[in-house]
Length: 282
Image 1: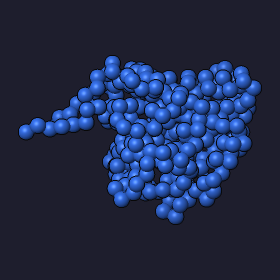
Image 2 (image 1 turned 120 degrees about the horizontal axis):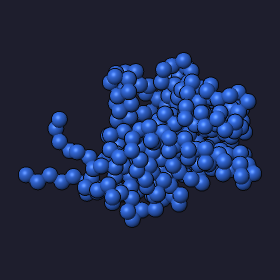
Image 3 (image 1 turned 135 degrees about the vertical axis):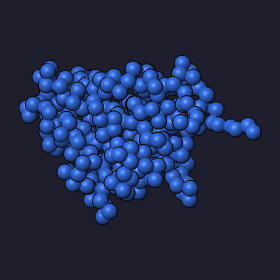
Image 4 (image 1 turned 120 degrees about the vertical axis):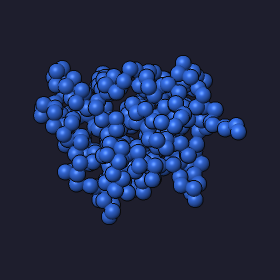
């Protein structure tokens, strides 16, 4: 019997991103991804300052290891980022659509405090009003804030197993969104898909019940409005989705495929992600 898998799964490492506008690069492993991302974040901040305005960045919690590195760079250089605005992509919500508590072990806001803001020298750190997380009770505030700041200099992020970026989940089977419609979705509260909750449970020992059902997310509209997009993949299971993102159709079924439509998008992956998926039982 002949089995047919998607053609993009056969794409070799040296062929990735060929024929696309996405700038593609490969680094060795997870620590190198973190280092690359921290350097790229600081470069965007410095470039904006050189142009006479403080940077505005949309940033993820996932990947995560870049933040202590970035904090160390800022402290070592005595470089003030107090006027830089960091807008977190998303946050888990309780069942009644409120932020999970800062003390929750999976809180993205809590992680940012512990692994970035609290590591910075106080006189260098972003002002409290520049540490932004989308508010589930005022989802329209993010777009207004971005307009007031004169736009987003860069959006950084990772890619989920179903191709989501931030928590922009692909439509369920009974939903329809064209790629164009999906690109216009803005900040909102939403249900997380089973796929997302399952893969996110890997980091908590596979206990899916720990993963919240609800989240607030920055929309594709805000993400795609950024002057630059910088995305990173550091998990072995991302080797297939990277190929779908770069060489599959542009579709809401794989939200990150919309990177193909952006004039200044980059994707950096670890070596093991660049290798074709090893499809076998084991």
